[in-house]
Length: 76
Image (cartoon, rainbow, N blue to C red):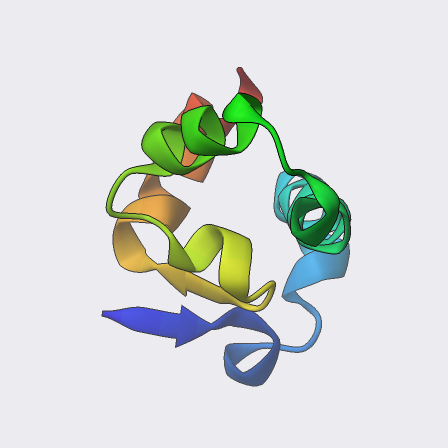
């Protein structure tokens, strides 16, 4: 299931700094990605695999993403 974290709880970002950080990074990547025109772009797409939505929208997370975030998987 996909969740819009700002719609679920607008105060969640102020309570979970890691979530705010991930959303900030996603926003920066989303801004830069249209300008990347090299083989590196393919490696980015390959790296996200079936989680392409991470590059398309900043507010939506799968339940699995939130679990991974709580375990520190996104820290790397």
